[in-house]
Amino acid sequence: MKKNICLFEDEKYENLLPLAFTRPVYDLRCGILTLREKLSYHLPNIKFCLHTRKILHNSVQERNPKFSVNYYGSEDILFINGRLLIDKQTAKEIKKLELNYALTCSGEIIAANVTSNLVEQLFSDDSEFIRFERIKLNSKEISAKLICYPWNLVNENGNQIKSDYSLLVKESATSKKHSSVEYSNKKEIYVARGAKINPFVHLDASDGPIYISKGVHIMSHSLIQGPVFIGEDTVVKAHASIYHDTSIGEVCKVGGEIEASIIHSHSNKQHEGFLGHAYLGSWINLGASTNNSDLKNNYSSVSVLIKGKNVDTKSQFVGLIMGDHSKTAINTMFNTGTIVGVSCNIFGAGFPARYIPSFSWGGSDFLRNYDIEKCIEVARVVFGRRKILLTYAEEELLRNVYELTKHEKVKKS
Image (cartoon, rainbow, N blue to C red; front, top):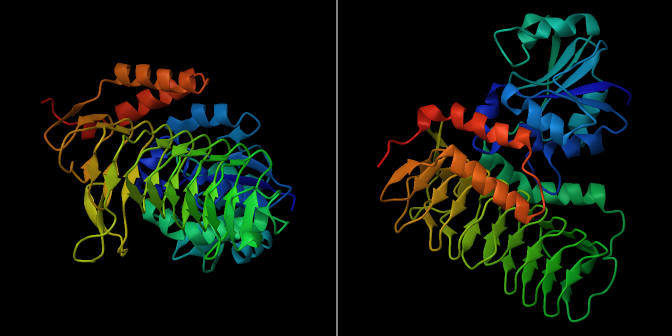
């Protein structure tokens, strides 16, 4: 399939905040792969360009030096919605999409194949989003999955681990036998070369596959119960219990009890405490005995505050959603369906509010603003601990998010 493909963001990114403050929606993980990586597997041999919000342009370009960002050239372009959770059937529909035709799902654009002479008309000075309504497109309605809220990613995670595993793993067995490690359904367990598994670990793939990447270290007396993905160079601490439908990104440290959760790269939850039906961004640190609730006492559907309004998730289980660079002190507790913004520092007794604005400092007793200069200083130290430089583009992004969220800032206490 030789086409120019542009992954685009639309206005619905707001429903995926705070996770989407610091990354495009197509770089969110669900399963083993991000939404963008899934597209690359289902639509191989393609030339990508990336559309993103202005606030993200410089950081996205820096992270993707080989990609064009917000530049579209002069050829026909197949636009694909970055919120698409692609599968084989949707990929098949996209591949056969004719020029100046669009695929829609519940009226939303999934993909649009646009001729070069019409591409320029999709953009206007008064919007940073692509305006497909400005041109005439024939449309075909299909059944597909567009991610609308963070809990959609969590709820799909187990099935996505299974489908990604089938894309990535061609051999049914692990690369080698690890002594004193107990395997259940070993044919559904992949352990990459260079992974270290200590004695008395139980890898249980009875209910779904386990994918362990290179450089992973799993300490003794840990239980991994699939479907589970563990990213490169991540450490699973001794006595950890990693239960079904969990994805842990690269260079993390995890321990305690984790169930049905997604953790992006460079985040730590390495002590005792429960994390369930949660989605954590990058550069997060949860203090010892941090816990979140993911089930209400009356077993009813969980509501979450999105853009100032309570949204019924229609899910019985919803835990913590936390943006990049946020941290908790020891013994921090979060109620069901809590959202914590970017670069927050949460501490103190009791349950903090179920919505905590970005750059907040405090807990249930008080909240005050977290100074942006202190935030940058801490981020620089945290990056340095991983021998990574906090670049100008990443610093600029944090400052821009700070400005963008000013209207949410808490009053000084």
